[in-house]
Image (cartoon, rainbow, N blue to C red; front, top):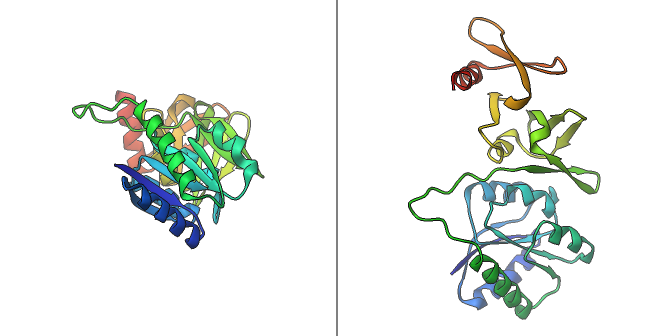
Length: 241
């Protein structure tokens, strides 16, 4: 039995895909999303074997969801736009369904998903699955997705549904909350030192007292980020470790 998530802004398209998946007899739909914010929330709480993903959705491109898709979840794109196929397969999509597609085409995609999943070794029940983390962050710049290596990120500032990602070369704005992004980054490297700040400890050049209870982290360019009390406690524990 496969589990599936369906993400499409068109109710009729979701309904048609539900019928096709129901016709397989061995697929359970565990979640649906009609826009990008809803999909990101769903991916943070729900795991599935396959994600059927529309490319153009309210709140952003379906490609923007790639960093939030858990490892082991197969991607099948569903879209009326052929021109995104190269980008889809560049992120290792299993299939690319061009609307309108019939039940036979969905069955073909499911067969490919099953073949893909059959090649992935299962995690032993006694071993907890490792938390998936990003090595590269895809940041939207105009109509392009630019890969930003995570190890080059110094710090990340959050404000509402947008973050500012600072590297040695430049700063990037990315449409995601700081809380969502934190769950995708390696906790051994990135520390939430403040409700609005994540810092990469590998880029911190000094840790200084800010007042009696709080610390400040300093970067090579002289930027100074004041930690909250809880963040200061985390930094102190890392220092002892």
